[in-house]
Amino acid sequence: MLRKVHAQTPPRGYAAALLVLFVVVAQFAAAPVARADEPPAPEKLPEGAQIASLEVLPATIALPHKYAYAQILVTGVLTTGERVDVTRMATIEAPACVAVAPHRLVRPLAEGEGALQIAFGGKSASVPVKVTGQQVEHPVSYIQDVAPAMSKMSCNAGTCHGSANGKNGFKLSLRGYDPIFDHRALTDDLAGRRFNRAAPDQSLMLLKPSGGAPHMGGVLTKRGEPYYELLRAWIAKGVKLDLDAPRV
Image (tube, rainbow, N blue to C red; front, top):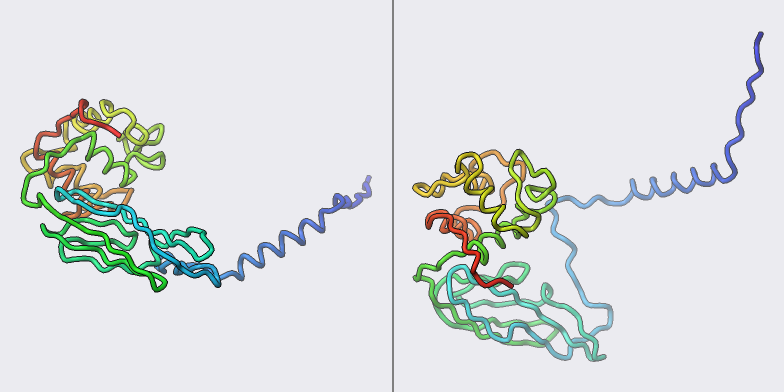
């Protein structure tokens, strides 16, 4: 016996919801897609804003060793009294003794003195710079140097080896909160194969982040860069754990 099948009526508002969804998807599809290799849109002041003066922090920069750095922050004081971050909008001329990254991190190149010349909106400021200790061996601290470098490279982030189960059999404490656990993972696991005192550059903990060995996390640092050289120096000096080092 054949039964008559009645089509169900869509719930009230169902058609309207589908229409809204269709419009949103169409707008998203029509929007231009930013390429990963395209630089971000340049920052600019609000329309009509005028700079009355510039304030720069720090007021002076001293870089006492080859791993030292300073972050420049430039604040524009508007004629209305309001303050706005113009760090990446300002132009900075650096002396030969330092290099300034696009995000305004200052690192030493050679011993010397000079000044950063900062300008924006018709106003200017000067920051004295002094670089010393470039030929002196800097004692690398696990607590002060190595652990922070791994955090900056996101090695111990929740998306990498700091996740609950680690990655590829290698686990670190999240953001380095447990230095004893992390030190043991780096120096004792895999029978100590992650480091090589005799040939530091052949250590897995350098080969992986520098692209010398397959690494799911990609290339995070390269030979000659500060993070690489910090890790290398620490390995060459015996991968020591200095729990008594001063901390932030």
